[in-house]
Image (cartoon, rainbow, N blue to C red; front, side):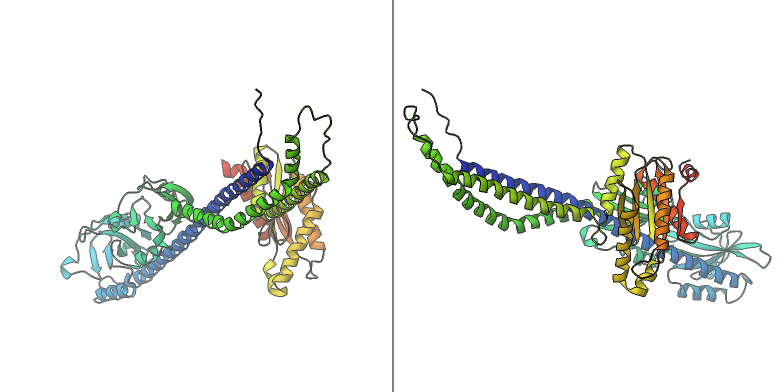
Length: 531
């Protein structure tokens, strides 16, 4: 007996396909949204931490600079007579007016204590052998000492000092101030102001030798952190961002800045899991908000497919009643609705596909272009650069900036400024050749990629753009000019970062040389940077 395969019903098959499509779309959309949000949050966290460390670095630099200047002025005044009877009162007054210092003192060139704001008479003339004193006497220059343990207080100390010299320039010793790092002071207040500490973010400060000068855990102050890759970068005088695993095995998003005046470094970091959790929560909210609409959509599709498949069910019933003996006599009924429904189904899905494609194209365009000018945005520019470099395609980069654009906004208003930006974008698309990539990089800064092996082609195009803008009235009824920097890959740069940096520096050189001009990165500049 032959077993007849009955197969799947059309309605069940279509409904199953619709359900799978919806689930796949939801899954893919959630995955893309998660990755995009994660990258965005990581980038934002790096930027926030970097802004914090840079601001703190500037503040601490300013504090040390003020301390040195205060010590220099007071030292110059007191150096005229170190035996004056009011010397102790002067040091005490200076220490009170500069509360950042725990103690202010004067050491002569032999290392003996001349006087101090907290000194007992019996201590005057005592030989001081601390590490900070030895460093100041040896170097005889304004300095912030390496942290050292005070024998008198058994506290971690940093000393700020200024040399003392008489009218003939003879070295007399130095005036200095000590800061106890374990105690509450202005540095603890400044360095402890990490934003959003509740989420696990924290900051710490290291000396030029890699020892912890400040940490939320006071017991770690003085600890050697030179084994940490970020600390080693700071010891080398570098600033930047990095994703690392800290000593407790926690994945961290770390930003760090070098404090030039003291040779210290400040590190701010946020647990990566906090960022990932935020991204996951956002995706879950998107799914929850979308789910009711998707359920309604599935219910409508289920009802619609039922209506649409009715003619096919009639044909299936007719086919099931046929037999070999009757097949010659029974004619297939003409069910016009079958053809009609099939065509309508095709057209309906065609319309739906066009609609979704239109929506996708719009979303894709919005993700790739700048909403004001219609040019590519920075993300798309990075994709072009990465692809061309991977394919070893030689090209040039033009970085251009509108000269005095702030004056345009201040004089004519931001709406007119936007019209100037649109005018420049339209002019770029009209002036450059086919295959060029025009991008609004940000603000009044634009980037054009020129796919050509010769730098001269890009220079000619840049000059054409510059001349056109300088000779053509803008929407303000006045002319606006451009400063343009040009660099070429691979002749003057062998990666994207170097290429953009050299082109950007050439653009700023054009501004320094008078604006409304084109400058290019030469091969010698590249060789000097990479040698």
